Image 1 (cartoon, rainbow, N blue to C red):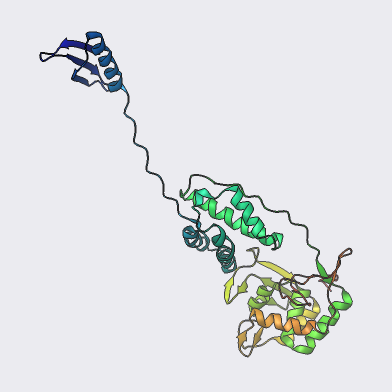
Image 2 (cartoon, one colour; image 1 turned 135 degrees about the vertical axis):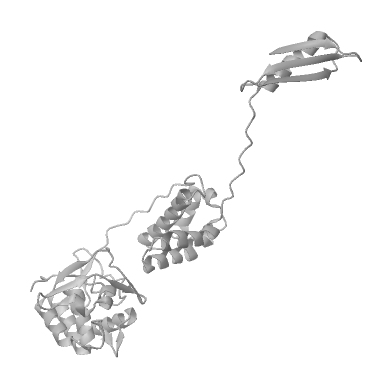
Length: 328
């Protein structure tokens, strides 16, 4: 590397910079500079040499275009929830949460601009909702953002999402006498209602599991039920835990199934050749519950809570506890 300064024939100075690049190639740069002295021309040449030897600066990468939450919601439902074959009820819950809670408040913001303060504003807006509902909304938002990170839509989680505290719920239950009154009232309605009450109270089946129960799942010889499917809005899926379980039947339930056995279809619960829907099951339980006492709470409870399943004073008997042995 060298810097040579010579007088220019038309006045001024010519600076000749010769240097070797890091890859071994030789380069030469000659310029005429309009300065008054040789020393000034040399200083200019040294500065020029340092500039030429600097490594090239890589161009800045183009700024990533980040979608808004409203635009990404559809990709999240299709590419994550439906692609992973989640249950229809779970997909419907995510759609509802996005439509009613997340998109109205955060839909216009890009995913990388959602801040901790936005999360707190969301909690404040949901102040009248139950803590479990608030946590479901927050869980959906967290999953949406984490999926965006996994897909490279955003570089990292833009905020911290902390759930609210949930107190342990007080469960209601039927005691011996109240349950027997409910069974008697159900038996007076019709055979399907009688079976629904026994399947929920003595076998512990959920509403969707009752609706999807088929005769091949009933083993009267072993007094055993195989619970391997559930129905939600006409769509048959696996059980809530995703596993098949076997439930021992009481003698009363086995006898009721034996008397109810029919050839009208594969389902156990049928009416006029059709499977019972969730509304039909709920209405039957409501009718029976009108003639039975309310389920009582554990000690220290102020009032008996309504069940989320049937929404009636009879409650979702598939979820209520009963103080009798299943092996009777």
